[in-house]
Image 1 (cartoon, rainbow, N blue to C red):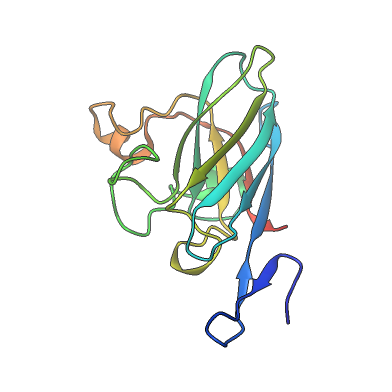
Image 2 (cartoon, rainbow, N blue to C red):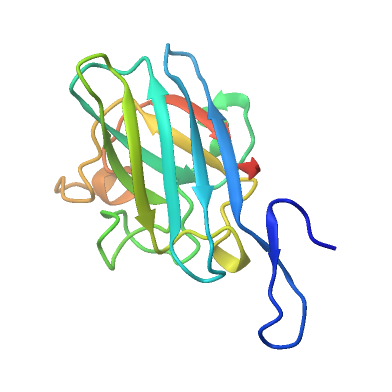
Length: 171
C-alpha cells in the first residue's frame, strides 16, 4: 500500500514505503508561531527543511534543533535534549562533530519573520535517524554552534530557552 506521503521503490524488485514529507506546526509561550516542512525525495538522501516563522525579534538569529521527544505535555521543555543518537558534542550543521538534531541558526527580517530553505544530510524521515514523532524547537537565542568555550556550548549551543516547538508528523 502506498500512502500520499510515501513513495514505492521497485528498483530492487521489492516494494517498500518511504516517507517523503513531514510537517511541524510551531507555537509556545511566546508570540512565535510557524510551520516547518521536511521533504526527502531519496531514501538516504538529504532532507530539505523549509518554513516560515513569525513573532521573532527583527534582524536576529535563533537556534533551531530537533529534540529527542515529541512530548509537549509540559510545553517545549518536555521535548527533552537535542536528538543525538550518535552521542556526539553539539556543533554546526556542517560539522562532523554534531548532534543529528543540530540545525544551526535561522535569520529573521526587519519584521521578525524567518523564511528559510536549507538541506541537511544527517536528519532523515526514514530509518535510524528518523525525526518523525520528535519535536522541532526554535530557541530564544543564537546558537553558538558548539564554539562557546564551555560545557553548555557542547550540549546546547547556549541557544537559551525554548520559544516555540512542534511535533514532526506525516504531511
